[in-house]
Image (cartoon, rainbow, N blue to C red; front, side, top):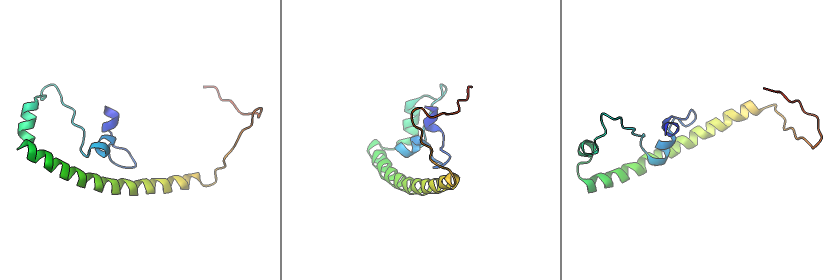
Length: 101
């Protein structure tokens, strides 16, 4: 679960946020009272669901645009580091250096 909550260096968003449109909420033992949480965040169940869906679509559209741009920048940066490298193919029987760890 912690991997899904950590922000990625390229996208600056967590995988959970990219999937669900909100940050992950990990309850601790002291504050694990679902009724208290629902009373605090849910005015009317039907209204809150509709509002959540409307805002979710807007958030995910915005995030998609940001992540697409950041991924493009990350690919360009990676291409810079790949300049001057050669693809080496090996055939069966070729001598290779084996480093023991």
